[in-house]
Picture 1 (tube, rainbow, N blue to C red):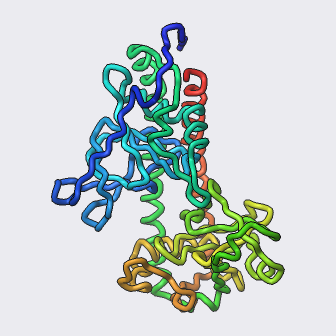
Picture 2 (picture 1 turned 90 degrees about the horizontal axis):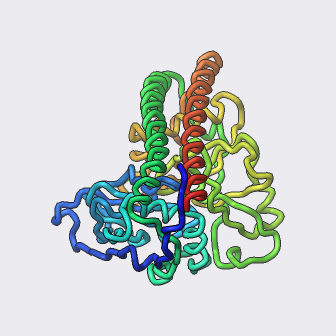
Picture 3 (picture 1 turned 120 degrees about the vertical axis):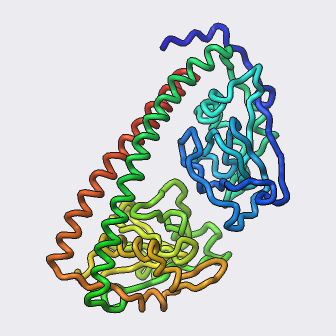
Length: 382
């Protein structure tokens, strides 16, 4: 597609976009059933695909409507800006933008938000050390060259096609996860009816470093460490890695080794992944349990799948009780009843697991390629 920029005119972001600040006291009474937090905005995605139910007790009050765009103002380097096609409420860490119709199309607005120039401006205007945020006043000052409405529609049509392709791979990934969930449910339902033992017979369980003001102050021995937010199911998110001061004794005890399993102590309890030396040196804080195998009875990859099943089947929920913010203590985790598969069953499990992992990696690679292709075209056209 050839782009003629001769008719493009310089504009201020605030002159073509409205910052909508419409609040509702009680979303449920207002008939709003969907709530969107920062965790529901996928990095790099142009469309909101996930949400929570307001009936679950969210505290959000900022209202959004179809055709608007949600922009995550906290940690803007995560590139969370997506169009919305339903009504609901969102977190206070999300700004609700609306294109001014005779200046800017709603389809073109998310492309502007994902452009490198806009993201550089948003990052430069962010303030705060632990959780930097930008604001509408500064974003409104951003200046860029805007195409005529006809060009906006043509460019948006092309770039949104790559988003649609990525969403197709995303749906395939969801279908794969559904099959995987059914498979592990069948396996672990059968295995837990056979020989079991407490988890501490198979794994050493160790909580990470407790945070306090002294270790937060920059000083000597600053080392990278992982938090709850960095551990996803079966993978790690290295987007935002912090550093703490780790002394000699701490380094000996809390340094991660290849094959360790990290599991979340709070929130989505048990969410876990296997450490494979993705960083040369790394540690972890006390929102995470580190599980180090004592033997090969239950390999780390199987343990992570078992934890997934414990989460899905409600076993972890029973373990932590009805607390408002669930926590899985080390004492309770150590006593978790754990299956003891035969070596033959464990090998068969790992072979099938490898098939799932390979297919998932392929689909994620395709998704990353479509995002990269779209971003490259945004860079060329905007």
